[in-house]
Length: 286
Image (cartoon, rainbow, N blue to C red; front, top):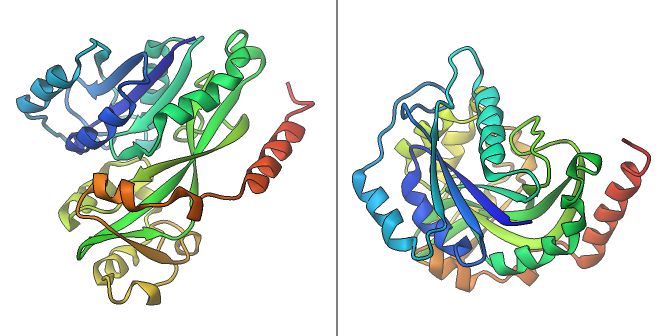
């Protein structure tokens, strides 16, 4: 019943330097999944500087990190099918019977210790995982863009399916089984990148065929001065992200300190309702 954390490593591997230290202490093992041919899910090539692996050795003071290289790209599969396949392969490597927590390099827990404490309440689900499949959700703070002296972020939290006891993924990390919601936050550096980096991401991720064609123009126009005027800013279905907000901070560490989770998270009653609804929905399902 270990806390196993897996990261998918690709062209944005440098972001792991923000993500990994936040989970290192409270994880039992950390797996880094890297395509051995250095291919993205779209078949594009990428490279990883040798200094990155030197950094891994430096931070791995307790020998927790496992580099898992395999052939994750398959030319006969779509980008989403490649993603699901890699996530399943990674989870098998992490070991069924443990908490399987999968994160991307651009996802940074604000308090991973608390998240681990929360999911430990459900350790009984690890004893016979196939008989009672569940997934654990936290909430994302979607960082939209770097601007002067801070970041623009989406003004509403979004669900992030983070942990599961059985990795029967159907789309991304979603197994379509019962969800247990927790009041934990993850900073998601999904769009706060350079224009070139965004274009690389959109060409190679699992949702590349769903991209809103007008997204990039709106993203380019966003500033500290006009963000309150911008509405419907999501990169797939625009109305899913209705508005933006601003937080000061020159880097992720400063933003983490300046961001108040109590002002952002759904209420405890809302989370209770969501969990009751999920429990009831799957009560009579096998």
